[in-house]
Image 1 (cartoon, rainbow, N blue to C red):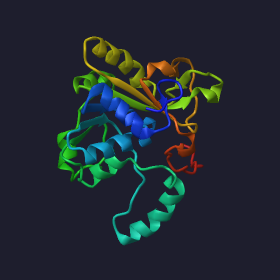
Image 2: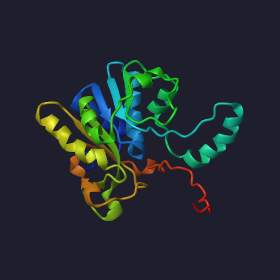
Image 3: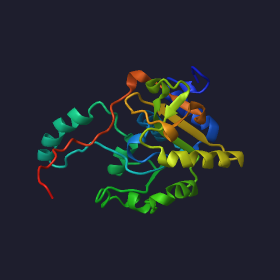
Image 4: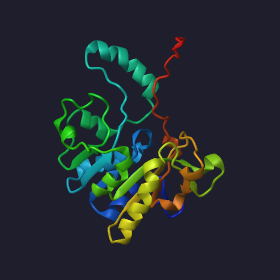
Length: 242
């Protein structure tokens, strides 16, 4: 694994190799809700599972963001230019698109504890693997699923002149509680891996959101492929006074 510091790598495939070396081919991957998913690493791991049926990949997460696609020809003509302009430079979460199309391979399972309303009405697999959890109990339920890998997008320390640090930015909530739980599991003999993917477009959040880079076992860094953040369209503010 080509690294700069012993844990950093510019090669996403080497990061996948490092994770498999640590935990084996049975991987239960915990990902943050929404924006904090490390898309490049997740896509590389998912692609590896698609071509290697010996890998048993279980992804546990919530709210996997996808750009909208129209159903009818009219919807597609309207949405495609809009989606390209707003989301065109953001890589798509490959597993999430396959989930929505009901085409996950047999060795991959996705369990989510938050569904957008009506999103999976006709998706029996996702309904069956849904995890009913109050957000207060999300860490407990993630650990109960057997999570042995956690991966997250982070802001690099260079953004705040904090060398050796990274920021969990908008997703510190579950990760800060998961890290000690996973390290305790590791001390009991279960291999785990913590993965960070840096993105300089992610805002730096300090205080408890800033952690030592050494918290992570693997850090993927490739500034040339940093992508914009997935955002909601900016809606006009109503002048109506309630």
